[in-house]
Length: 280
Ligand code: PAF
Image (cartoon, rainbow, N blue to C red):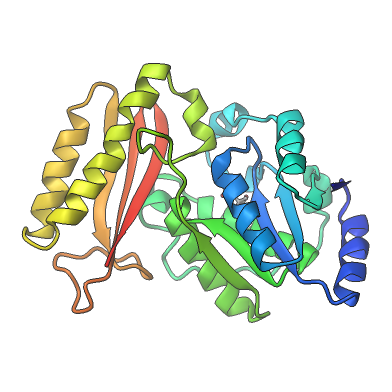
């Protein structure tokens, strides 16, 4: 695996690969890699010829400095995992190399950035859109691979890609779960062993709610699910909500085509955990 610390070198290398007709798949990450990230890379390697992963804990998407400081950083272990998984290229920059003063277009996020995660983390999605835009300018991939776990992020990036119009295809990869159903996340390692086990309740509650959507009023299901999760020790629900799959607008009734996404954010032992299921 080639490791690049500087975008100039990475750009030159990838331009050479592109000139040889090789397709590029890109997986942006903030490190602390787990099976979820590796599944994105595996999918990238089946669909494109060069798998590029970036590891950069982007300060502009953290509205809380304590959260940024606490974000796990495990570069040594990450490099080992990527090498074992067959990654060809790793971009491992520091902030001066990413934010090197180049102008980047600001995407119009159309309000998608102000709801759900955006409501409690102002500026978060503007930071995500900014860094993903810069990374796309550097890597210029054919395909971008991101996880369904951060469903709202997927919709934000989709919107940004439509505005960029550079033909990059976004591939949404399914959520990888721990044995108890908990969605894999770098944040899970901040939970106690007991909290991590009990956090499996989140997915079970989502599944039950999704099943009930055909026979019960959506607001009733939301309320009962919230109450159930809130009653667990050390659980605080931020939202549990049926939404339109693209606009993420709240739904009071299933739409004609039946397609919805059920999204939730739950603080378990103070750790913010996100999960969702698609209802079709
Ligand atoms: O999902 C993440 O890890 C980050 O938000 C991303 C897409 C790498 C941007 O910093």
